[in-house]
Image 1 (cartoon, rainbow, N blue to C red):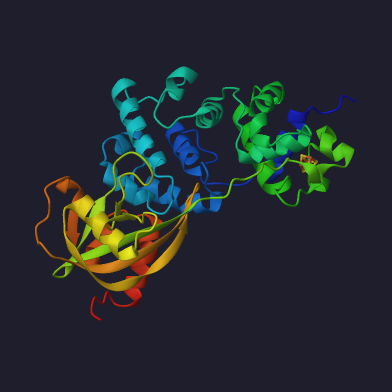
Image 2 (image 1 turned 90 degrees about the vertical axis):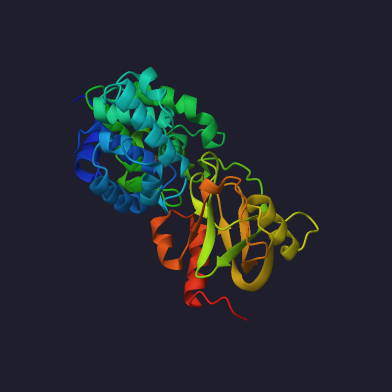
Length: 358
Ligand code: SF4
């Protein structure tokens, strides 16, 4: 009797054990694309409520293309990696205007859209349009490193893994094949405890056959993450305080925050606070009571952020970039998208009923 191929075993397992997720079962390329954008660097459980909320408000590519960026960032608030949202917005507008609203099915056209890398292009074109492009994400890299006993840190093997997957991928069901590989990594070939006894492709796995599963993937040496000290001011004018919008591009682009910035070497928190606020807003301020401090981690660095109540001294706000600043009441903050670190500060302010005295 002919033995089953890698792909047949994998798909047979996927048909019985694959995860049920809100974006599975749809053929709508817009929904598949949205899910793949949200899933980059983000856990499935985190994505599900964001995906469902988004589709309630923006169910079509046309509705995204016709929306304002601030509305979308508000929907994305808390999901992180905000450039994904900005790029998706821009890409939907391009599809609407240059491709008559039809998501391109050619690799070069789709890959050329803002925010679309090899991963997203392969995922969308295989799942939505049944094109045989293999997907390599973090889960798949780990599985492939074990299957192939790959002797270097897994990210270095991406090209090799793709070549091997291109030989295995099922041309009738490329999207299911890719999703099966991702599910295998998530449900069976787990990071810390691979369940080899439940693995449908164990017979194809080099490290399993050699008894060396624990050695793969080879770990890379991680550089220590820099830590920065940051100060910010909640500047009060009556019952309202000042917020400002970050530049559109870069980390947390388009989100709102308190004015402030990095403390220079040898500089006191107070000096940095007054200097940063003056540089950013043109306002001279007097430092008041300290609200508190929070720690927060980003991908490449971490911060301790100190927040102080502040009072403007000159009462005049520079016109420089004034379209990117607002005076808002505590209640109005729900209308704006803020980074997670700012939400941590809001929690402290809320716990103290926003008191500025003493
Ligand atoms: S046999 Fe074990 S190590 Fe190999 S792919 Fe399956 S779960 Fe992963």
